[in-house]
Image 1 (cartoon, helix red, strand yellow):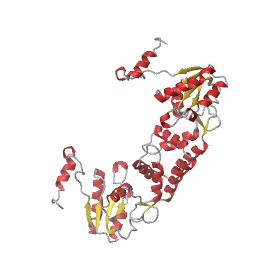
Image 2 (tube, chains in turn orange, green):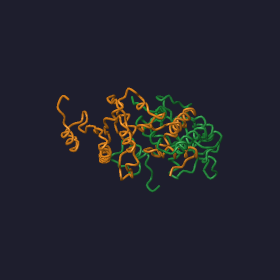
Image 3 (tube, each protein chain N blue to C red):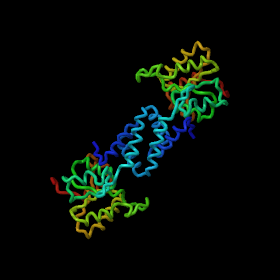
Image 4 (spheres, rainbow over the protein chains, first blue to last red):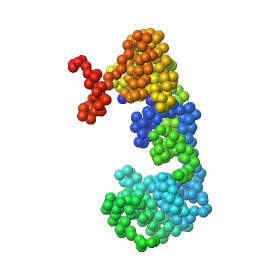
Length: 202
Length: 202
């Protein structure tokens, strides 16, 4: 049990320590760093956190994080509204946007079905996706969830839910990653890469 | 360059990213974690940081961090005021207090002399230490700085500064650490452990 000579310091370290992946030593290091900064810098950090928590909305169409009712992607008329890519979270939207290859819209589930973590379909934005497709205008739903058991389960659940809407449901390709070495690739990935082969030159 | 769908999120990530040792991915992860917390929890974190920065003082005697003019150690009458242990920073005070072996007071330098980092004696609480000793009542100054070149330089500088005050100056023992294996101990440490040997049973 560490002895703190200042209760204000102790309180700050305790609060920082609550953050995921930040241990007590790191929390102390960060607190002492902030003590050495200008007061205005610490205030800027504190304000940015509170403003973010208070001001951030979830887009009413795709549930991506945004500052308004509807996110910039959904309100961009040059994006292809007939294609909806289903992802787990906000980081996945960023990752796909960084490829600069995708011009459609998104649907952020907020996770995947995981009974062990107590996450069922009703905890995710699946019903809203089905409604969105039923409203019309969507020609293809691309499933881009994690290639895990939970992701596969969620993919299948969504596929069944969308089956009678007639929408085209696709899933992103699974195979060997760029620059991976074949000999070190696991058998499941290699098997799927083989099964998912496409004509050369396509 | 990551695309943020929310400027409030982007601003918070940027601020968190300024902290030492927190990269942009960790900053995003922490920001999204805070977004999922209750507003009151985020406010508690933000307040604790600002309150700490605004409220924390440095003890006017030993320059340890505290909430008042004088720290709890310096104002504790049961501590031995005739012994002053010189340390680099606040974490070192905590580490020594955790041993529960030390009943004297401290003097927190705020670093060590390091020309390469532009830190000279005047940037540290060395003059205040000399004055403290000159005011009388101190019988022993224990040097407990890092066993590095900078620490050794600072030890020697302080020793020279205190030479004419007549105070006893000691330095904490250097030797092999508890549970270290002799064969893996570096030669400088081993040489010092040998030179600093004491009668068995002491």
